[in-house]
Length: 129
Image (cartoon, rainbow, N blue to C red):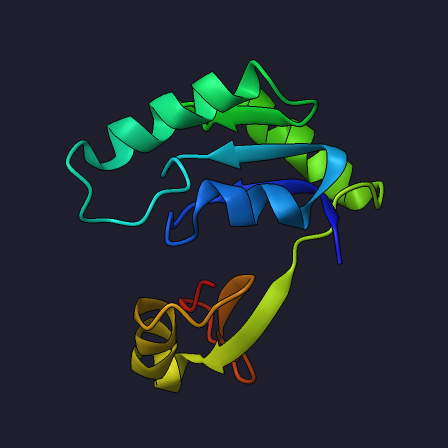
């Protein structure tokens, strides 16, 4: 499957693999540079690589903005509500299994968002979700 947009927050996949998962004119947004940890320049080297490759490919490769404001979040919300943006969900874990969900993420298995669900069966007036 190919995606129009990929947002990489983890950086545990090489840039080449992320690009193969994109459509020919897809967009990659990354805060990790698409480079595995342990490299000499860390995420800075990965971000520089993303910017350099962006110059020579049709795909759009962008570092994640370092600051988000209300307008950015509202724009994303509008895209989701309009059905133009669909987050990829990998797994859900109930709140009681949060530790298992974190282990799943740490082991690098997730291929989408991992969600912790909170059940609100009997809310009290002071209970806020």
